[in-house]
Amino acid sequence: MSMNYVFGFFLFLLLLIALNIYFFYTLMPISKKPINFNVPSIKLDLSPSVFKDIYDYLNYLPSQYKSRNQKFQAVQKTLISSFSPAIVQLPDVWPDQSLVASGSSLYPHKNEVAGQILHAMKTSPIALVDNAAKGTQLKLLLLLEGKQKLYFKPKRYELDHVIRGSIVAGFDRHNAEVFAYYLAMTMNLTWIPPSVIRKVNVDKEIVPVATLGLKKTMIRNANAKHCIYGKCFYCKINETVCPDHKGEIEGAAILYLDKPFQFNVYKSPWQRNYHSTKLMEWQKNSDFCKLKLSTWRHLELLSGGSLTETIKLLSAFQGVKLATEEHFRAVERRLLKLYATVQYCIGKHGSAKVFKTQW
Ligand SMILES: Nc1ncnc2c1ncn2[C@@H]1O[C@H](COP(=O)(O)OP(=O)(O)OP(=O)(O)O)[C@@H](O)[C@H]1O
Ligand SMILES: [Mn+2]
Image 1 (spheres, rainbow, N blue to C red):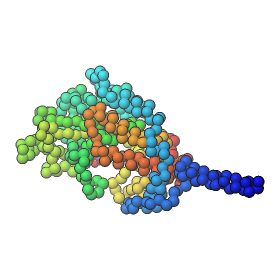
Image 2: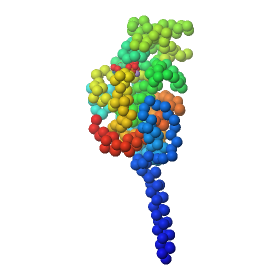
Image 3: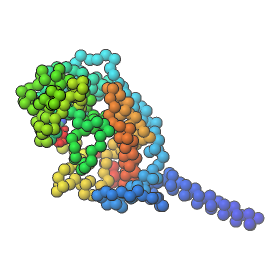
Image 4: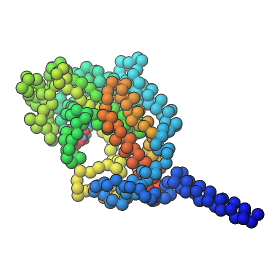
């Protein structure tokens, strides 16, 4: 009898320990860093211990971050209805300027409106084209019939072109401007100007309506085609943009914001700085753990492939592929790293210190 009792107790103890270990590593990975994890060798210019810790969390990410979140279905449905091609195209789609940057978004976008605006940006006839001398890279200002203005950032590379060198090396990638818009809208960050890929025929749509200033920054190449070198900080006469075999230049068309916008009010703590002497806090402090609660809640909805699936879906309404499959996979990897980083932050500092509920 007493032997049976000891054996039973032993078995119970064993079960308890096994259950403890199971729950420790599967249900509560935040509370303990895993052991025996082979951390990939990473050479980054930040404290390696932080990266090692984050990779540990990545390895033991709760399964919810690797599968689809059912709550995202309703969000995706709303996005689809904002971006789907309009059944009836409105004659005057441009937002009333008094509505711009007024509510919870930069531009109205709900109920097919985003799709309507993108379609109009892509197809409206161009009344005037000028150099847009703002910023560092070649860009044009398109004035559409109906008076709406667009910035046009021309394509410089194919989607699969890899640029080596520093992070500021090379020209801007036009698809990245548009990708950023869809990424932001999918993340419910609604303060990004609508952007779409547009093709413009140089001889038919630019030359006849080009300003004198723009014409002065155009030359003919060896094939007698009109090429543009533009007017900007980095613009050079030997770094032109030329039309393809169809006579077209592809670019990112970005809705131009006429109203002055107070960027400082909405400044992101993760903004980057090009001056090595005036680094942002996150660039100096490798343990920077502040990211917004509503942003985190929304990011949690995008797990398991939903993020890139939605970007593909929404951009397909404009007939565009915005990145290679490798890029889309890289975005999903980054999302996992982001989840792991936030888990690390919560584990180290606690949710109350990590999340900001008011901006
Ligand atoms: N959609 C927009 N509406 C109105 N103004 C804009 C818009 N986008 C950019 N600008 C203005 O043009 C400036 C340059 O834009 P942007 O940064 O996109 O150009 P860039 O050539 O890539 O320059 P940089 O190298 O500084 O990023 C901005 O600082 C802003 O003042
Ligand atoms: Mn830029």
